[in-house]
Image (cartoon, rainbow, N blue to C red; front, side):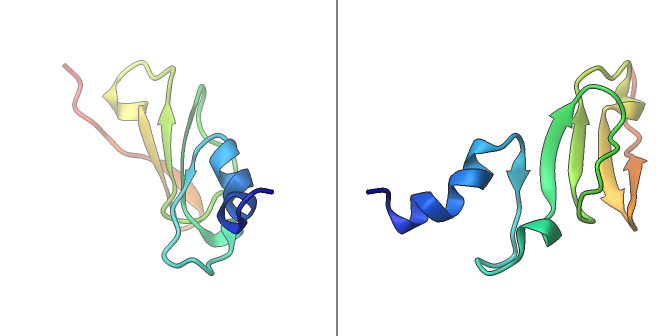
Length: 79
């Protein structure tokens, strides 16, 4: 029989991305996530979430943060 820990955290551990909780009782939907993928982010994630774009052409569109309910590209330095 699986432990309580394994049962409770099976879904977050098996899914793509990482959820960041401020407490053990925080709801999954309100926890910021760290995910990656191709194309600009479009999922409705919690504020504070980070998205790493795998097909970015330069540093200006490689990392996005969810701020105020919208995805914002964090401008980087290009060489």
